[in-house]
Every structure is written in structure tokens, then in C-alpha cells.
Image 1 (tube, one colour):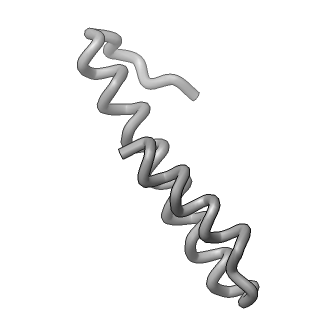
Image 2: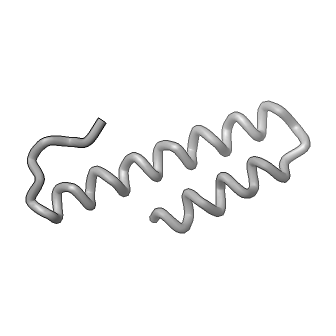
Image 3: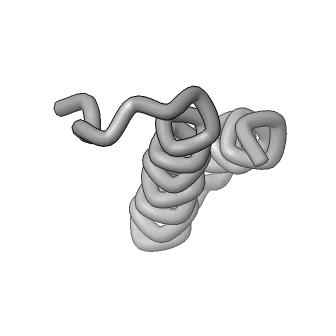
Length: 50
């Protein structure tokens, strides 16, 4: 999931359309956040990192 977020971030940097860049960056941010939350839950950390 983290790899997919990095791919989306790279695609956002290549995109010519500002709206497409914004959409891809937001999607990458959500995937990265979700990945970090799942990682924290798997490690037994009950408090999400901010």
C-alpha cells in the first residue's frame, strides 16, 4: 500500500493538470495514512501517531 502511495505521488508530479495533481496527491496521502494506521495496529500500538 505504501508503494502505491509513492507511485501516486510520482504520477502527481508528472501530471500537467493542477486538478489531477491535487487529486493524485490527496489519494496518495490517504493511502499512506491508512498504511501507517494499519502498521501501528499490527505492532500493538493503540495510539495512532499524529
